[in-house]
Length: 369
Image (cartoon, rainbow, N blue to C red):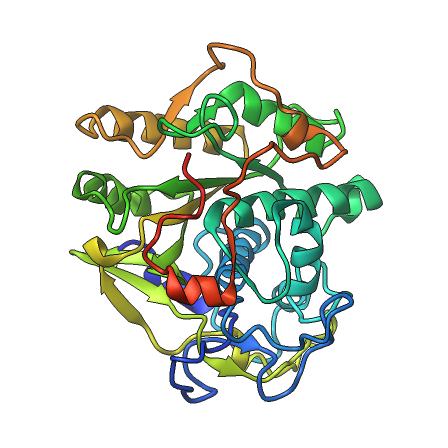
């Protein structure tokens, strides 16, 4: 098991229980904030809870929070959680509050993801979730100066040769990563910290067994942030592996709303952390998932590429993703790098209503690469 202790202790666990999930102690695994106490209504809706539909958003918040911890406090982060808390740690928790004033709230994620069909009450898949984080970062970059960005890193959603066209393993293109860094820094730096999100579909109802060995090995990467996905139809945050089991934090426990001020060093942060670990056999996880990696600088990214290339070479013809210097044929990056926020025409953006999600938990309707 790689890096579980520091990851489990540092990650915020968001979410609420689904109707068929029993409520557990508030002190247990994490939170889906907004159950005991309602959060602010989302947009023009009257929805003040994400019970039954918000697990993918919440588990993705965990992964991004981990990236911020790596960026601000070092990797791995081993500082004990005790009051008074480190100011930077509290500032990170503040970013994920349940209101529009918190940059990475569920409210703002849904607003940024409208172009991908995100809406309060709808269950979302990994691909649409990754693109929504990309859109949210782009919107915030346009509204703030370079030194004021809440997410101090570029986001690169790794897709196929045709930027989302179905078929084939996703391709980490070094030139694309460089362009993302340049856009993020507004041309002021050759390289910046970068968050790589890799949405994958590794089978139909189950993960193809050929992918499991390489999936397990991604956790040996020092850049690994873990996996968003896990159970069929119910997203979790997988933080490590041990033998044939995936270790995960579950966002399906009901928690009260606690919005923490960025200067509140004595805040109650109990709902932002997990003291219960769970596991699931690797061959039982849902085949639709997203892997995250954080690279601090160019050297770190080069190390990641070297590890990823070796992993692909040793995958027996079933790589999770590959690495290339440049695309073999031109790719339209306007959807990724442009300011218009356009979305490729695709009738399968990975969004379904709450009722559909329950009824089709095993159908692979998310995003096929």
